[in-house]
Every structure is written in C-alpha cells, then in structure tokens.
Image (tube, rainbow, N blue to C red; front, side, top):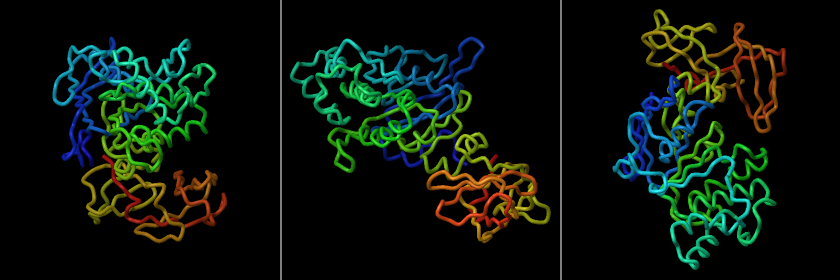
Length: 366
C-alpha cells in the first residue's frame, strides 16, 4: 500500500511547495487534520475529494487567506508563516472567475502587471503572450460581459498567469461550464499550464507549478501529474493518476474512484493464498492474516470464463456508455458491475454468463 505521504518518483525533482502537518478547525468543525504533501517545480497537483473534505480551506491556507491552527506552509524550504497573500507571489483563480466587468480583456489581464508596476511596453507584450497561450489572440479590446463562458474562463486564466506566479491555484475552474465546453477546456488546460501555445509544440513559457482543486475524478486524472486524495480533512492517498486507479490504498479511495465491487474477505482455511467471500473462495497470492475488503476490478473481467477464478452470474442490467458497456450482474445475490468495450457481443439482461477473473482483477484493501 502506498503511504499517504509518498515521494515516489520525485527524488530528482526540485520541491518548491511543502504542506506540513496542517490542522484547521472552525469552532467544533474540523476542516483539516494533519495534511502533508509536496509539490515539485513545474508539477500539476490536483487536490481531489468530495464536497466538504477541506480542499478549498487548504487552498486558502496555502494562499495566506486563512491561517492554520498548526502546521506550516513552506516555499523552497522557507516558512511562509506571517507572509501576507500579496507577498507570496501566488496566483489564485476562483470558480466564478471574478472578472472586472467595467474593464476590457486587456485591462483585466493586465491588472496584476499594473499592480506590480510593470512598464506599458512590458504589459502589452505579456498580455499578448498569455492571450495567445489561452487561444484568445486579438481579444484585447473586447468587453468581458458579452464573452462566452469558455472565453471568460480563458481570460481569467490569462489574468492569473500574466504575472508569472510562483504557484497557480485553481479552485474548481470548470465547475460552472456545460459538459461540451468543459471537455474542450479540459483538453486545453494541460497544454496551457505546461506553457505550450499549440498541442504537441515545444513550451514557449516554463511549465506552471499548479494546485488544482476539484471534486471530479475525470478532471484530476486528465490534468494532474499527481493527485492528493482528501477525505474528511485528511490525506487518504497521494500518487499519480495511474497509481491511484491501479492501486487504491483504502476502501474510501476505491469507492471514490468508482471501484464499487467490494466485499468482505477472511483467510481461507487450508489455503494460505486465498480468501473466503460471500461469492466463494477467491485466490489471493500471499494471503491475508485477518479480515480484509476485497476489490474485484470492474475493468478486468473476461466473458470467456478464463482466469484464476470464475463467477457464475446472471445479467441484471446492460447500460451503453459510448465506448464502454456496463454490465450489472448478480453473483449469489450480490450485485457487481463490470465494464466491457461496446464492440463486444455481450449477453442481455436475464441471460447467464461465466465471468473469468485474472489475477490482477482481485485486490485486497485494508
């Protein structure tokens, strides 16, 4: 199991942001309880978790808007305790964008640069540069109110990027967009944050170190180099999107990532490499020493019955989801869900099938 505070694959990177044992309560309500993780230079880290888990509170503490009850925020090893928000050189973009309606696009994007006292020529050049980066060249003189939601989102992002913040923080930036626009911007954001004007092009600016707050697993996995999964104010797991999905560390992590085929298991008698469950004995190399939760991965089953275990099942429901078709099946009265490519010939509701489980489909969680 991955330790919640892991630096796997980061030893050769420059750590710039350290969040160290942050605690925060509001009256009797505990918002954060010992949150720790690190962010490397140029890395995109997603803070992922359900509503109320402490994501936005943590972002406010990193920004200096809120003070922690205990713990510390460090930048390149130096504590930021007592450093006000405007002295941290961090950028923050809110979900509602907070654009200035009385200013045009150019003056919105230039706001932070003017506050820093940059020269007019420098401001003009930088505004043009970031508008090109967010695919809005030539929008300088446009009013912001008539812009579409996606265009306003890009203007807000350009404004946050313009001063070249040491750290960019994005708080649910796609939450208010419709699905089509959200998916298009979800494809563009990694390019923008990595400093590329066009997909596949070489960076025109250094990659932007980013903290990205979201409750949406799809957003986190599409954007982030690493994900910090939060649960009730604590860090549940830290890792790359691939690590979290392939090896969820806890039952909460599995459920939050949509891996819901979970059942209780106990050590099998006379077989040290198996567990007993309500659907029968399942092989588990290495075995377990006590009760565990068994995860049967929904994306690993085979309909030809081949594998280290087989399940006799009845199809309860068949749901088409574009490239995937989801089968809900009953095994000894227990409902399980499995995903298959839609091009496969799959049984219909009411039909029986024999599902094969390869070794990697069966995992034990503490």
